[in-house]
Length: 174
Image (tube, rainbow, N blue to C red; front, top):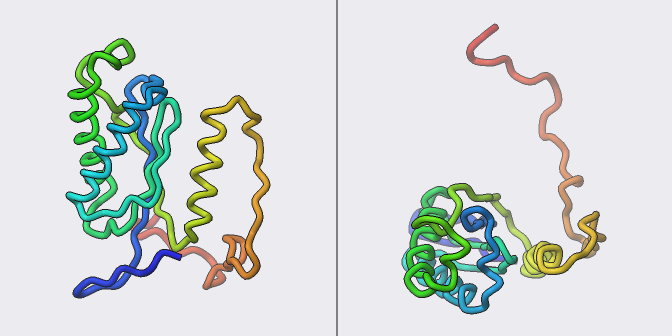
């Protein structure tokens, strides 16, 4: 499991799964050099923010980034830094090889996907990323996947609400 992060006045865990897509969802990551440059740019941005990259994988038209130790940054702040710096570096180093795939001076689309991820095993993170990547790089059925749960592993369905009863009334009133 990922260890709790201890700082001067806090203890906790802050992990996120981020997914970014190039503008117009173009398949710019089919080129190994573009993937390598993006990976390096993300590593440099993470180092500047003192954030850990726990997993990083590419599809032909997107990137999955699993980061930890993010307590000092908002999700929009992290996305802006990762996307801004990597866009600059990729466009500087690969402008000629990607110019036919992009219009204008933008590399990334304006949106992104994010989800907070709690304490999970490294095997779970690896399984998730690999499972997501298989369906993007190969022409396979995108139906349900079989998931095995380790003995003693807690699942979402094991949790019950801590209180029973009716929801509280809205503060605005009716």
